[in-house]
Length: 448
Image (cartoon, rainbow, N blue to C red):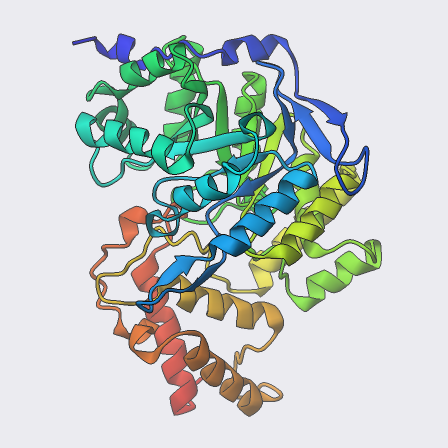
């Protein structure tokens, strides 16, 4: 058995990046608009990666013959074909996305194209069983599902959840780091990295290991957007400006997740959208958010979980005519972030569905997404003295019943707490469900 230091020594190539400076940008040809798609060059290995990447956590779903939600493979194929034809070449998935269906759908769609035409990223998502046997089987099953014999970018999934103790248990003490190091040497993993959700002290711990040469990473995936830049919500989340600065200082390439904060930054409140349109009439709210992330040179790729062709086409347009933000535009988005924090009582749910299935059948993300959408769209009754209160009240209650089955609504939560450890945003889920259930009841009883 190897000692702790040997377990942690990954021997990654990221140490070379510190001497290379920030990631280089490059324009290259896209099928529908030659010479347009924005790319970043990975200084570690020269990979030319589209600045926009396809996150496979939100594939389109349909009802299967048994009434359960299944991935719409035909729609996925169409989206993947369009993405590749227009220059998107980075695809990110996980064994646990969409109740375990995401990798198979990605594999079916991507395997129809030459393997060298795209970069493939997936994760070791060994949350429920981190024994060596189960973890290695999960790793090998990813090859089968994705129909490949190597991964371009492989991540230890959600380091930081549970702190250093959980990391040692999931990856070190069971021998997995040593196993993955050998897989990398054999060429089945080209780049080894991790995604992070956790507290600042936990991130600092992993950076200290990197500084001592015990834990060298080829890349890191963090949550970053103009709200989380300085206003990360949740009791354990870290402001993205700190994460970025620490990784940039060490020359570690960065992949961005949640640039739209679960879609919330694509559907900003009307008052904020009006201010955006006053500054740039032709820019969408989503484009503002993507351009914020892409304005930082250490960013290698920005993931977007696109559910249909409309956001895919819009994102291709944004990154085919990419314009980084200047400092005045970044300052404007900081003002918008503060305004959202102060005026709109949103739940910091990104609709990742890690909390699902709820053992009591509650549609947790459905409840939160409906609540957030009503606030964002201005159809939120805040007081009985409010103008149009009765219309807003009825609109909320009717749309709530349409969006979430009554038996799966917030008032059926028994506060078992099963969901708490699964939420990467550290949301106090039972407390938020109780708050929404109380709000709904006050609407019904006219006691708001």
